[in-house]
Structure formats: structure tokens, C-alpha cells
Image (cartoon, rainbow, N blue to C red):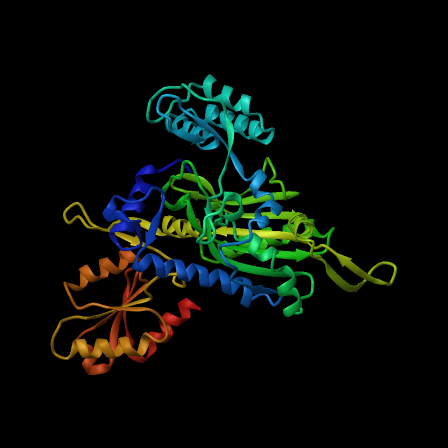
Length: 488
């Protein structure tokens, strides 16, 4: 799909106008690449988390969840390799002093070429970039930038520094007293949630009496000092991850890697999203901990972008934590080996599934956002509707009395009281019924129930379906059942 920047900007505006996402600290002109989730955004975000958490922990008997602290002992990040390896190649423009992540600068240039119709040249440049990054060829990356006369968006010049590495971790001081050596108090905001799982591997395994293979899941905040955070909530400095680390026998990683690739794609498709919108992308350059890695990419209005990563992390993390902590990070396997004796102690290998919650939120909104022309040349009409999966929609049922009198509000509020213990509802009696429907369409509410004078006669209401806009009379007592069938 070609980039659709107009649609992307419409989605950003819609998210603010209808209470999904606001720029953080907006009254103080905001903070770059930091966002707040509004009343409907926080509800949608929670529903995505709950759906993921249930799929991982409730539906898999051998996966449990934890909630590790954001602050961790600084040696954690030395052992994980983040202190030495968590860097990205950066380049500065000498005139504007603006710093760019090299891959973002080149990708942005390729997007401009695509917009001009120069698709082959864009593909060639991106392919060259991948090879140079994989080889850590910084001189080659600078030459690629200069040969193609890539310009700074601020200065409009191509006056570049050399390419160099920049560590992406935020650091801070721990404790209230100053130290002569600042390094004594220096800790990091975690750049990933995975290490909280690894350092608790033995705690969970022993207290839960877990038998390999088993997994540990976690949802939590992570922080990365992105130099160029961009594209709305797609790339932020503060974000949330949903990760699962699956511990397996060494030598079985290829089998489990393929299993979790299929399993995670199945989860995405279970939300009713078209299979053609997704693709796997194998990593050209593997991270320092991996022997295989791929991304699940989704076709956003800004093109195919990573939403989730599946990584075969080998025993890198547990082995390093064993070395740095001097504590054994081993599992005793009672299963019998080929010689008929227990396999014994080993450090497990790990398959990781890591999905960005904010990116999944953007995926759901992007996939759901629809502009529909409903009118005729004589009578123009249109609507913007979020065709959200019912199970994720912030509000499941809108309840409206047709008028503010004749006892209709009282009946509607009684329906609300009966339904709100089962799912999230919204009551409104202001404006014409058509306007109320349009507001519910815009926040993705799948069902609306209207109480009218006929309700007083036969105890039925008009239920209106968001996607088709069809309406039918149903018994009040069947209303909750109709909605619940779509949720579960």
C-alpha cells in the first residue's frame, strides 16, 4: 500500500477530537513525542491489554504473569548488553545542529522518492542501508547519505558529521544523597521489560513449580531516548510493551520459534483483521542476543511497519545474569535423556514475543478508521466510523431515550443499570437521535439501543448496529445477551 499521509493526519486529529489521545502537557505547549490517553483511549488500551493477557496466561496453562519494577539494579543492564550495545547510528547536520537516527533519515528520504513515483530507487537505497547497517559500516552509511544528497529538514543542507553510535537508555540518580562518584548512584529507566522476567526466572520457576517449557508474561512501561521520535504514537520515548519469554530446552529453539511465529499471527488475525494487511519481515542484522528474529509488520497508512517481534534469544540473558550475579540460573530437568538418565542441569534457551501496546493501539485505530459517503447528489451525507472489534471497543452499548419526557429517560436508565455490570455502557439524551448515533460511530460503539414510546407498550427497544446501520426491534431482556455474544 502506498503511504496515505492524508488518512494518517485524519486519524491523529480524530484521536484528539474524540478523547482517545492528547498531546502530553498540552497547556504548556506539550512535550515532544509524549502523549496522554484520554477517556476512550485509555479504555481501548486496557481492552487490548486484557485481550493479550488472557490469550497468554489464561489460555496457556504453562504461562504465568508477573509485574516487575521499572527500576532495576544497574548491573542488570551491563549483563543484558544494553550498556555496551544498546545504541543506534546517529548523524548530525552541522548547520542546524539537528541529530538524526541514520535509518530514520534514509527511510524518510526513501518515502519521498516513493511519493514521487521513484519506487525502484527507493528500494535500492533501503536495501543498501540494510546491508551497511548489518555490517556496521558507518563510513558507507555516510557515503550513501551524501551520494544521494539527503538534506536536513531544518537547514535544507547536506552538511553532515560522521556517523557514530548513541546509547538510547535514560539514566537518573538513585537515592537522595549526592555521591562523590556519580556512577555509584546511576541507574537506568528500563529500555525493555524482558530483563524483569529474566532476573525473576528462578523465583517464578520454583514458587510456581513450573516445568520446561513454560513462559512468563508481563505488561509494562519502557523508556528509550529516541533522538527522532516521530509518526504520532508509533515511536515514543515512553511506551508500553506486552512481552512473553518462553523457556525451552537448548536445541529446540527452531521448533518453538516457528510455533510462536504462527501463534502470534493467529492472535492478530483473531481480531478480524485481513491477513493481507500483515507480513513477516526477517531481520537482516540480528541483535547481540539472538540466533533468529523476525517482525510482524502491519500495513499502516504510513506503510508496512513493525508491530511485534519474535526473537530466539538463545541462553544469552540467563547465562550473562548468572555470570554477573554469581547466582546459578539453571533448571534441573528430570526428563530422561537418550541414555535413560535424567537430563540434569542446564541454562534454558528463550523464545521472546514482544508487542508494542501503543503500536497495537495505532494498528487497531488505523484498521478501524473509515470515512463513508452515505448521501446522494441531492442530499449529501457522510460519517466517520471506527469499526473497532467489538471485544475491544471502549463503549459496547449506547443507550438513548428518544425524548427527555414521558418516562423514557427512566426506562433507559434502568436498562443502563441492568447492563453496566456486564459491559461498558454510555447514556445520552441530548440532541437528535441521528447526531447521537454519529457520535457513537466516531468512538466505535458497536450497538445503540433507543427507548421510544413503543417500549412502554411491548418492552422492546430499537437496536442499531454500527457497521451496517441496520435497526431492529428486540426485547429489552435480550439486549444484554445480544451484546455479550459479540464480546466473548
